[in-house]
Amino acid sequence: MNLKSINNTSIEEIGIKAYSLVYLKDIGLMENNLYVSSVLPEKSIFIKQLTEIGFKDKKLISARTSHPQKDVKLPRKPCATFDEAYDFYKENLEAGMVIVMHDFFKAKFGGIISYSKGEIVLEISESDWNIDYVLNSDMAVFSHGFATWYLYKDVRKIASIVDGVENYININPLNEKIAQQITDAFTPKLAKLEKILSGDFNSLEILISDRFKIFPLQLAGVKNIKNGNYENNNLQNDIFEIKTPHDLVKWDKKTPLLISIPATVDRADALMGVIQEIKKYTRHAYISYGILSHPAILLREAGIAVERKMSNYKLVKITY
Image 1 (tube, rainbow, N blue to C red):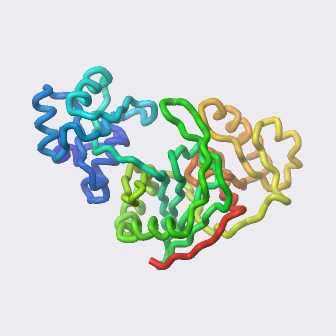
Image 2: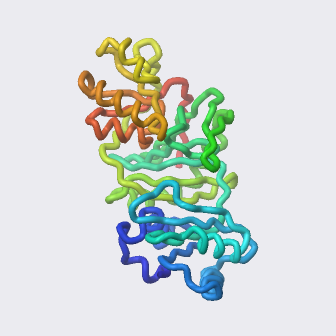
Image 3: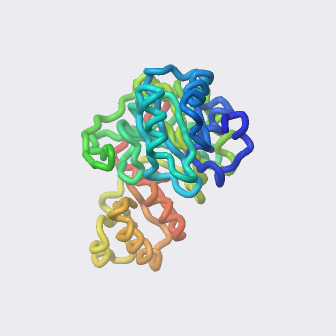
């Protein structure tokens, strides 16, 4: 199944990971070589297909998989040769999985783009983009010829997850020069992004290289995204932060809430328990995570409106 024959297929057949890349490649937003197949052919045919697409042997390739019923913890590996990629799939490809290969992309930044009510919003972080872990990510709002940047002022500790192992690294504040370079990279793509994200999909996970090349990863449709006024809201003196379920007993049921519990595997039950309790008393909460993070999604699904806590940010406006 090559790109020509896969264009009319569905997410239910090949999974959101493969579907996203095929669609993004088809409309020209993804510029890298891409190979998608529902079967692993004979090795000679496999190599011939890769060569015809434009892949180069002995040049690093991302070997990934897609599945109709799941999109996490799927086999993947950077491969240095066609032989290595073939052996990887021969060993790891299971029933229902789809082969997804593209040129290896070394990212310096990761983020997610959303679209709502005429605004394209980019939430971005240096290092890995693990939206359940990233606190105080930088943000740009593209609207009416201006990119309004909210640049966090202090050093941040950000979780880097490699092969399931979590480590924390310090990230320096993003400067205005880099904000300008990222704006310049996105400007020619804004019209296409608005078109893509105005339909069933309203968010797109992306990577950005140190040369400010953009690699689109995966589309998603998220309900009830609330963009709006992101001016710094200095909430420290009139907000109650919940970091664990035990904090609930100290809350007076009136003070605005800041939810700081991630939706990671080991904390998801705690977060859900907190959500079920607070929705008895409020329909609004602040979060330090992104507006498309899993904590934000779970809160909205429970009927709680979500806003980002935007304290300690520097505002920069860039014309595009």
